[in-house]
Length: 279
Image (cartoon, rainbow, N blue to C red):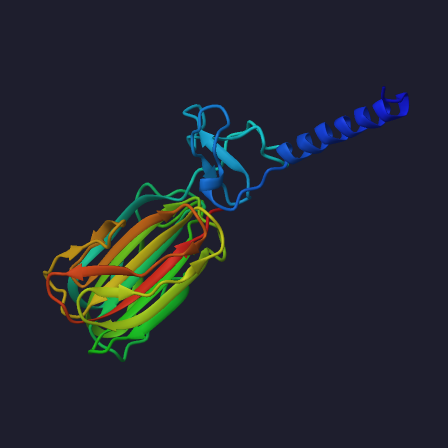
């Protein structure tokens, strides 16, 4: 027969075990969406940037609700919407000392405006409107110059933006507006490089947070009037011939893998491959 002391010790151990399990269950953190599986339906959810799991729920604006095991008081709350494209605009090839591009009418305060500009002359100095942050610019292997810039849309965002080149050039532009991107420093990694050949290949890099959006912009000196094919797993959002923009969600953090965009006419070009970070 067990003593009363032994039985008491066993009860305390069982209580501690149950308490420990409860604490573990209420603080389950994920690193990848594959770790978010509902114990009720076996549904695979989403590992949110804060490390808590959410699952599909049409009652939330984002379509996702935090699971019962989410911490920080978030269990049962609606999750923040994922990054999504609001709209994009573009300009066809034209000649002049400046380019004016429309800002998508659907833009809302806090959206990220992502811009790619092509100029047919290497020796140009870009004059952007106030509030635009340069990411990078490259003089191509050929005779062109390409620029990438971004800004966070304000409460009263102008309907267009004009960028000066200081001299007459053949120019083209793409502007994309993305919702739910971190303001200020929106990137979780990038590759910017000149490339030669077809396909136009952007090298892999590694993201550090889940639910980024991968955005690839490609410039092709010989792309006037040509057509583009999106890299595997990516969607083409805009195509002016010399410029093309593609994007794809990246649910999990880690290597992006290289991305290859194909043009109907190969040549010399430049790529900017970035990961937008969710807010």
